[in-house]
Length: 206
Image 1 (cartoon, rainbow, N blue to C red):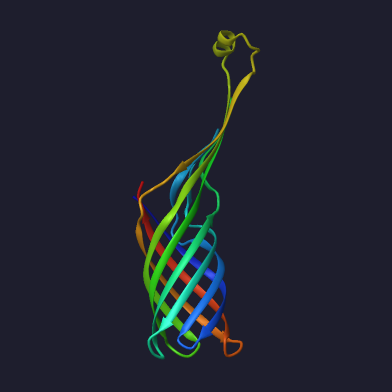
Image 2: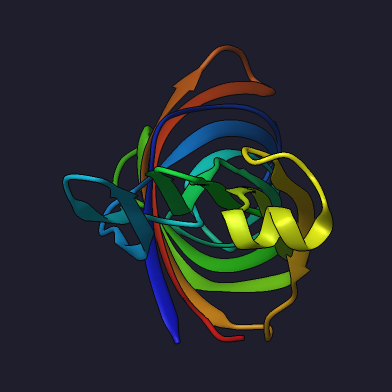
């Protein structure tokens, strides 16, 4: 089981309000709130753990919010995460070079309860579900052949093998938590601008 938590900051949303219904489109960037060990970096002098989160990266969301009264509502959202490269293995030693990264490409949905503290400040919390996607591994591996290997293949000493490949991993469909706090700017009767900080945590299983 792998877990990650994400914080979304400076998220700008343009929303259209129709009576008790709000429709919004947003984009933002997620950063890891608590990195986990994803791999290692190795050279001649040391070996270091590489920490990160597969939830880090750019995202876009489409949400609809329906208010039952002036304070309470329910929110349904669909989103896509374009994760940044996370180091899985980085090796730089004589006769061997490895550069392996992994990144998330995921679609998700969320449903939340929304509460307005004031006409401008609101909060929401609820459940997050992965709908689909993958973790994509991209690997480069270069290995210089030894004298015995070079002689066996009848090639000059110093020859090397080089491998490039991609591999996709598809996990289970986990359930997570989402919470947010935001501020709404009223531009006119039907158009609002939001600034929102969002946290979500989800447990991943392969």
